[in-house]
Length: 319
Image (cartoon, rainbow, N blue to C red; front, side, top):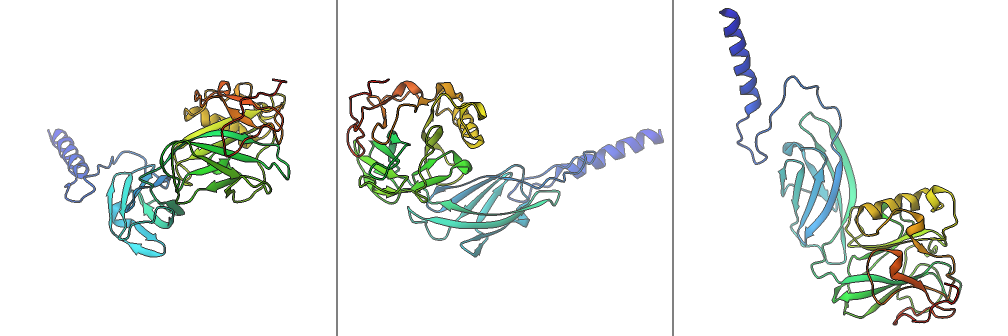
């Protein structure tokens, strides 16, 4: 009988300890006393502005609200809401459409494991233009440098749109577009190499695009986890290393674009064939087709590159 009473008392204590009072804004948190203690710090998975005055942070596990320490542009802020693995940070001053905020912080999980982070968060663009990659060249010269042309498919603001040579953190160069209103049918030309006159927007490094094998992406903002709006993968079909892409970065980038659903295959043989392209034989989109595949693309004839205007309909005879 004594043994039964001891068991009942033990069960009651475990239930009491794990129930919580539920009196704080984060809600009650149960703790399994028989589970091994967590020793892994929380990871920051995402940090994005959801509107002009709110930044949303998502972590890999629930965050202890009382331990949050955040600074925005060097100023400490406590105007936030913590719900499990998500923190909503409310700004006292709205972010300008073509600006970023420096976010620094320290957080802990419920076992006391902490992590620090420091990053820039780009402003939310409520009137973003919609665009497609329409033409690009990757074997540029002084008079005809590497360029990427965007076609505006829906009017809006370009602020924050980012065109990159590569995918996410693997990108080697990028251009962040500024606060400019554009209209359906407009062309936006980004220069990735010095020279030429058509490019209104230069990339940060002007180091040129990857000549034979590469990925070009357009994202909603420069944030590392930003939504990919459009992308292309190209290959010369003869490179043998790194699954036919020639570099680990391009191989990983192709896989990520496929997994994100913005390209139909991670394989080099299913990429756009760049073999016959030159500085003046650019790679062009076929009649604005968008099936996320090599079938949308062709190489125009010699001296047919047409950045800033409608694509040349004359194809290179060697295709």
